[in-house]
Amino acid sequence: MIELRPFDSIGTFRNEWLNAHHHFSFGSYHDRARMGWGALRVWNDDEIAPHTGFDPHPHRDMEIITFIRQGAITHKDSLGNQGVTWAGDVQVMHAGTGITHAEYNEQDEPTRLFQIWITPDRTSVAPGWASRAFPRATGSGLHVLAGGRPGDAEAGALPLYADAAILAARLAPGQRATHEIAPDRAAYLVAPQGCFTINGISAQARDGVAISNERVIVIEAGASETELVLVDVRT
Image (cartoon, rainbow, N blue to C red; front, side, top):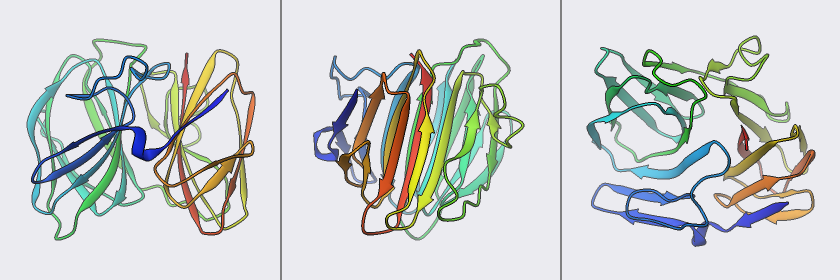
């Protein structure tokens, strides 16, 4: 099953510094039909105004992955971690037994990002944070950025305390990427930019594509360069 969720159908929130879109129920947006997708609990599409951001707030027992689409985000947390993650790169925070963090756009342009929450398989772990640059050549297929599946660490992914993976690709017009989905797993796909077809179904930038009971998906870029972010999770 492939379910297209057009960008204009997902939840929204806006104030003077944050323009947010929610693929799943989050904050004041609640839809009982969109509470998550397997172990994937949150996929927020956020635009943060320059020199603003999220003040310190706590989390516990959640794997939180941030993929930067444009600009940069500065992370600061109660463990003393501090760092900047730039466009095209990814950061992972293990909330574990508890962590307080802040996320700020300290740049002179808007920051656009995906923030993805995955329910962990291991709870009450030591909290932590890491960020990494992941250069990806156009047309080189899907690359795992963060993961907790067997083999993900050996592939250079940032570790997760979850049986899940975050993958990304850049495709030139007409190029294809293929992904196999094991039984009892599902996937969720969003293109930060470009348009594509997935097993023949057309999608636009920032649409959500919920995938289940499909063993193989073939993604083909449309008429412009397309970037993809895919989450593969247990159901």
